[in-house]
Image 1: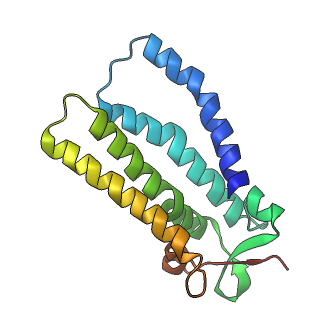
Image 2: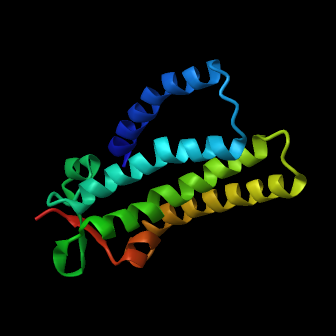
Length: 158
């Protein structure tokens, strides 16, 4: 996963000049709109990129390929695009967007107390999801909740 996130981090770093350009041009958007921009420019591409790798015939992201792992459906069937997108939606997009939403709500000086409380709750949920995902790798069969939900298996490449 570290290899995959290094690549995603390079993509995110490449977006920094665009963000600075928008801020320097005084693009005045409410926090919810900035959150939507971040979702469209960062979270969606990262999720789709990983889903594309896992849903392809290679059945693995660059990091998984390095470790000779694949992501397959039951019976070692190819994952496919939809299942790959669903898997990465739960694994990547959901906790990441909850974290972004939390950050934008909590940092908004115009947000009401109830919105700030909602932001704090989203932040806690995001962190709990990440903790459950990591802990699940060391308990029982080692399958993460998103793998159980989407019925996928990470296994050694043949």
